[in-house]
Length: 349
Image (tube, rainbow, N blue to C red; front, side, top):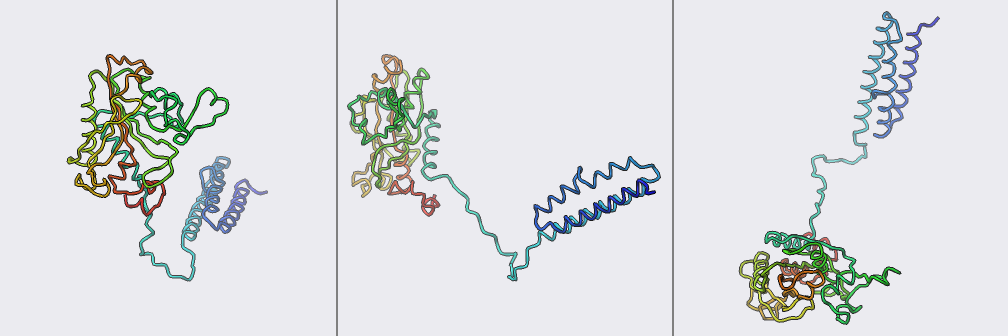
């Protein structure tokens, strides 16, 4: 009659055969891992036999234990050899020089336009301005009406603005892709009372035909400061400081009379030409100045939309095209180059 230990030893012989067959059929790392999971892990088939030692008498246990230890060492050794064999490169008949350097991976970098925009934001933050943001799909109220832009203003024309057809909802609320980041100023003033000192950087959209200086998608950074006793001199000092931090201490700023529905008085402002440093060149058309954007004191009518006391508070606002500033700082002559995704261009920065 076969003893219990003899029966277990016979089962171990079968386990040995199954392991050998599985190891022989493992031709890749995935298959080899399956062999390990079936036979060699803590809950694998071999480990289950160690748990059965308790079923035997004390006199029979050494015999089974010795066999189990032999199998464990054998399985682990065979498994390691198989793994090493699979890791060896297959013979292709070609010589491989292992001392040659590998293929270097090119690391990505932040887009040059966003690099300049980050610098713009950093300068204004250092001057005490907070960064605010808002939706790119905007309501007519915030994009136009609350900025004191009347219904017949040219900027509402379909040639300038991308309007969004949202079905029945659009019948009562007209949506559009924002044409400037000024709506962020209104949304911010609705949320808090003065003092307010913010910039609003972000993408804006207009129905402009792409050329060297225009794009239907571009970036703006608008600013707003509202408090008691704010004057036009504060606006000039802010923009003067910004210009010199971005382009150098020799940059000057000038204002020219202008008109914007949301500021009064309004002005167009220019920086010293960054190419010729004011001497006159082809870029500035011999004037020594580069037009930047518009600015002015916040029109009291705008304060009426956000329940600010225009007798107590004054403020200034400005806008600037981040793309245009990036062109001047990086010496780029065509705004379309920022959006073409030509890696040869982007790698320069």
